[in-house]
Amino acid sequence: MPAFSFVHTSDIHLDSPFSAYSLDNPELASAMRSATMEAYERIIDLCMKERVDFLLVAGDVYDGADRSLRAQVKFRDGLKRLAEAGIRSFVVHGNHDPLSGWSSSLEWPAGVHIFGDQPEAVQVMREGVSLACIEGISYRERDERRNLALLFERRSPEFHIGLLHANVGSETGHEAYAPCSMEDLQKQGMDYWALGHVHQRRVLSQDPPLIVYPGNPQGRNIRETGAKGCYLVRVGEDKEADIEFRATDVLRWITRELGINELRTEEDLLKALEGICLDVSRSESGRPAIVRVCLNGPGPLYKFLTNPSTLPELLDILQERGMSYTPYVWIERIETKIRPALDLTGLMKGQDFVGKLLRYSREFSADEDFQGLATKELSALFDDPRIRRFIDPPGTERLETLLREAEALCVEGLQGEEG
Image (cartoon, one colour):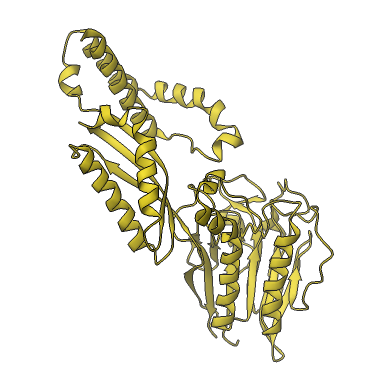
């Protein structure tokens, strides 16, 4: 079998809207509006530069079922560039862009194959020799709950690729569209599963079959942090596949933590925050970055930081300075998980109300029934998809942190009343 190569991408979300706060800065607003489009162009450029044999797109090309004409033209024109260079493209549709959604009557290049809602296998040929067999299926409707992986089967001896938008397992943090298990994928006879749906890149299996989520090529919010891109896959004559991540993102979302326990003055705080901005500017491969900083821990600056005017003023200062860097850094929010510098261990030994309160709190935090009750009470909030889109449900460690923060707030309030 001849060696060949391809690019695997998914979840491009070409017409994805970005958060409104970007409009506060014209340069950032412009970059965000065009980010997914430019990331897609970088995927096409990568295919051309590496002279791959084909491109695989594993669903969610667009952000909505009623996809914009601008996004469709952009997608079509990119695939046209590839077709003119002799590079084929294979596309499935996912939950964000099901086949039932509106689409224009654009003419697609001859080298583009868009899979329908029934499993279909297509051979990729080079000079009369079969390189690979690609099997794929698209979503007819958004709410696809069938196990589509079970519809795949090996149909010929050449390298077999399954192209599928699906949720593998139960711990992806995404809706369970086309749910399947690792075992389902491993028994279908594929050599490579080109998956889409999960926005964090993951290689679920290095052993045959390779099972790969490339993640989305451009982060769109603070939950999609770090380098984003696609996979360049090279398959040798022995059918061994080598995968290489290639970044395609235009700007990058970053989260950073800063402990305040060693910060004594406002100047210390400013220097530490500016240090984060400079470090991010130098460490993200020349890409602008949107950063959320979380201040945590106890410290002498607790009272200063809990003044209602402090965080907005800090944000204004850092945003102005960060935009002067090359590449620029935009601090989109400063969060706090801080508490006063209290000797809680010493206070817990006391026989007064504060001591009893702290001892009860520690007993609660170690009680599995309390943890279960807290999780149950919070579930109504986090089961709302509008909330879950922006806030992750708290795990056991986060519940512990929330309880410690509540302790500090209670003690500070009680001591303030005594004073």
